[in-house]
Amino acid sequence: MGTTLGLGLKDDDEKPAPVAAATETEIKEYVELYSHAPQTWEILLRDGKMYVKFEDKKYPATKSGERKFTFGAQNENELVFVPGKDGKIHFLFTELYGAKKIR
Image (tube, rainbow, N blue to C red):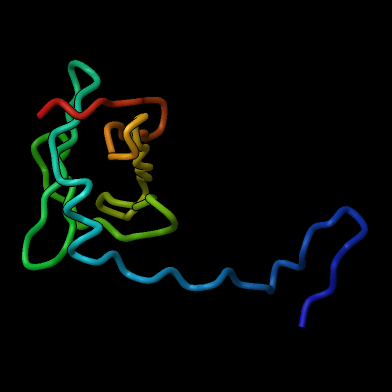
């Protein structure tokens, strides 16, 4: 059991709650091609799992939070999906880039 420090920070030994794996229905909301020219990110659904195609390589994606996923050779890249005014996913953010769904 951790203690709360005076600054409102928690001890490092407290681990965040595990994140449930993305469902196929959730993944379908993200499946599309996103672009921040000249770069593109293609989100794919294969055998119930999500993949990110980036720079001609396909990587499995791991859910890390609400609308957040990690991908890459070492799972080092983070994606965040953002809805538009209509509530549907229209944007993808990663590192310094914001990409828009293009198809």
